Image (cartoon, rainbow, N blue to C red; front, side, top):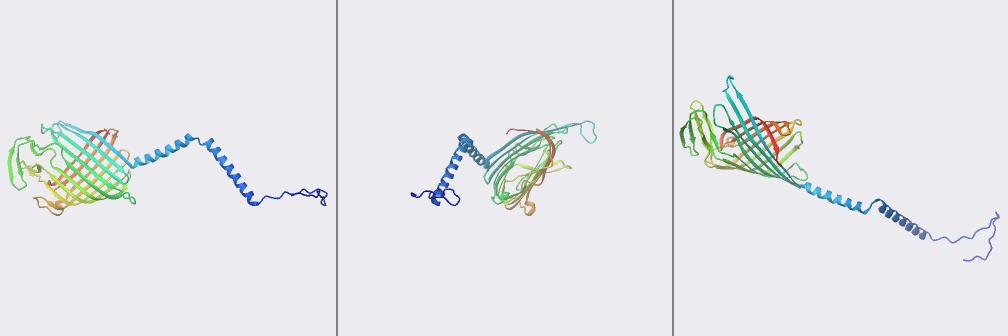
Length: 371
C-alpha cells in the first residue's frame, strides 16, 4: 500500500513513521515452534557427538547383554564339592590300674561329596558319604572294623514362587557297608545262629575266630519318598529343615547275619539272619544345623519311618515296627585342613535288628578338597 501524503507532525512536533502491517498470530507461533525444534535437535546432535561416542554406546549394550547372560546362568548352575579326609587316634598304657598294657590304635578314611543343580524354581541335590575305620587293641592281634558306612542320596525340590521355602520334593536314598563284616572275640566262643524260619544252629570257635556276619554291600537299604518340604530358617547361625511324605523302604540281603546279642556268662555269640523285606508307609525327617562361632559348628537330624504295609516273615506292629535314625555332631575347626569332631549315630531298623545300633566317637579329622 502506498501513501500519498507527506509525514505529518503531531502536537509534539516529531514526525510519525508509517506502520508495516503485522503478520498473523498463527504464523508467528508456527515459526517460533520450528525455530525451537531446530535449536533443540542441533544441541542434541552436538551433545551426542561430543559426549557419547559410538564405541561407548556399543560397550554399554555389551554390558547389558553380559548382565542378562550372567543372570540366566545364575538361575541354572552346578555347585560341586568332594572332600577326602582321614581320622586317627593312638593310646598307649603301661602299668595303669584297670587297663591292659599295650597300644590301642584307630585309623579311618572319610569321603564327603555333594553336587547341587539349581535351575529356576527347581533344585536337584545329590550327596555321597563314605566312612570306614579299623582299630586294634592290646587284647587282640587282629584289626577289627569299627565303622563302615556308604550312603547315596538324590533329592529333587520345587520351590513355590509365592513361598520359596516350601514345596514338593522327591527323594531316593541308599545305605550299606563297603566290606564284609565279622565278629571277633578274644576268647573261645559258642556261636548260635537263628535263621528266618526259627531254626537254630550252634557251633564253637577258638579265640579270635572271624565269624562272618554279612558280605560286602550287604544289607542294602533302599528308600524312596514323595512329599513336601519346609525350610523356615536358612541362616548361617541356624538352619531348620523338615520333610513329610510317603514312600517305601526295602532291605536286600544275601542270607547274612546280624549280631543280636552276647552272653558273657556262657561266652555265646547270638546271630540273627537278615531277611529281604519290603515296606510302604509314612516318613518324617527333621534337621537342624548352624555355627556357634566361626570355628564351632553343630548339627542334629532325625528320621522316622512308620510302615503301613510290610512284606516279611516277622510280625511287628505299632512303634515296634518303626524305623528310627538319630544323629548329632559337633565340629571344632583347628585349621583349614583339620578339625576335632564328635559324631553320634543311633539307628534302629527292626527288620534288620530289633535293637539300637549306636556309634559315637571323638575324632581328629584331616581333610582336603578335591573339587
